[in-house]
Length: 270
Image (cartoon, rainbow, N blue to C red; front, side, top):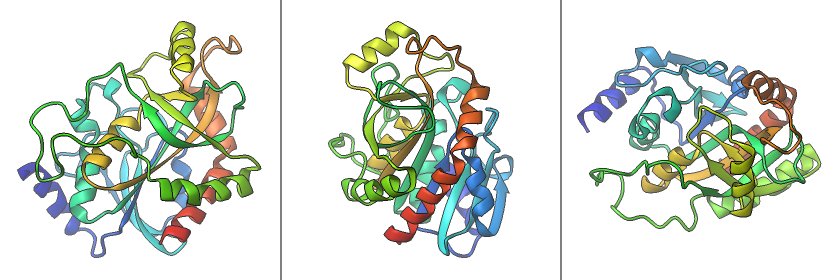
């Protein structure tokens, strides 16, 4: 708790008003930060006990400001297990948000499509998640200050928010995908055999983030919503070579829709 409080006190010394909404911007989706007004930008490297983003497309800065006149905190870049961080470190900001008074966490990511009806550039609302191949982010001594030892995971993603998002995504993009996001450790993309297995288990998209953050949000009592940008079809579907550059390129092509969805959503829940 000493580390948490050191971080919280530093941030409170930089910003007067603490927002109730936090957004984590995934690969290629950081341009939403350009829409934020009245900004206070704090590089991760300046924040006590904060990890540093090392992935291309993750700028590495915490932004306080307003989006559509709604006060928010935005993480322009997140942390991943495959970067060498522990899962505790990758989710450190979520607990900081809780201590700052955040009530709602919006998670965004770029992911590979497993559902054969999906297309590159689609947006998917996350309704549930799969995570079989990595340790639990809650492994180890329980942090009683945030939540109890055993937590119910029936509704990780707030159903009320999913219902609000459905018509927004449909109106802006012309279609509304709602699916299950599978978490894999990375940094390798999945093999065709792994994708076939995930499809059998019910996954619609696969990526290397989000799930640990959602678990900690649930443990901390935060409302949570997740939006995935399908930037490529997963391995073995079209026999295409997968690359991070393609992920960022596709995300850039749909950024206008993505930004519009986020702005409309936070306006409706404010």
